Length: 91
Image (cartoon, rainbow, N blue to C red; front, side):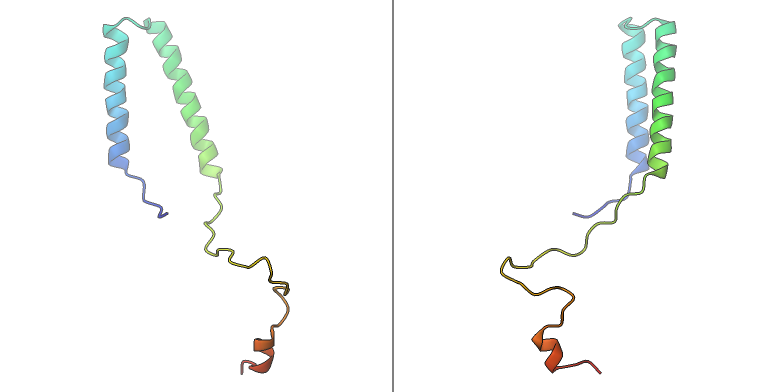
């Protein structure tokens, strides 16, 4: 699976759309008071900031480029020389 670059345009549009739709839902449907809205917005921003700091210092493991194709009947040690290597040494 290939990693793709992050698309900022889509993320910005999604955040803008959620802000507009959320604002409509809050004020038109009378879901939250102004005080509740300000407190919930503060909590969301604090959680987003903490996640941002955590993700900044997160060090992902590089993807593995080798695959294990060893057979279960293979009894040679990976560090030992095989007969092929011993008969044809490299210059």
